[in-house]
Image (cartoon, rainbow, N blue to C red):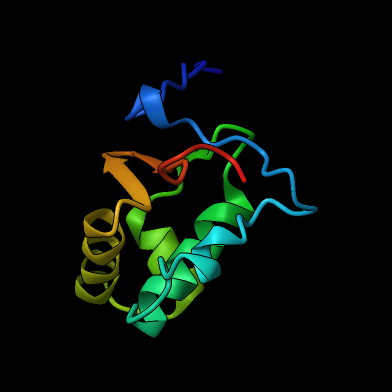
Length: 106
């Protein structure tokens, strides 16, 4: 079995558990990070938060994520670009990273 060493794509923005009661930082709503996002982008973000480890890292392949979200690859890539532009995720094949929101955990 080959061991894969995980390393954050953006080390300075490793996700931390918010002081609130969940992995999902309330600032996503309060500070408007989710405003105007497409349904596909919101679904992708929820999926990545769910499957990510304690640092927000996961190695799910694009095809597997697209199948789970029931979208085609172009739609998945558009959703990913939307989340990257919003500063919510980073992606470097094959690694996804849910990013810490600016300002640290709430």
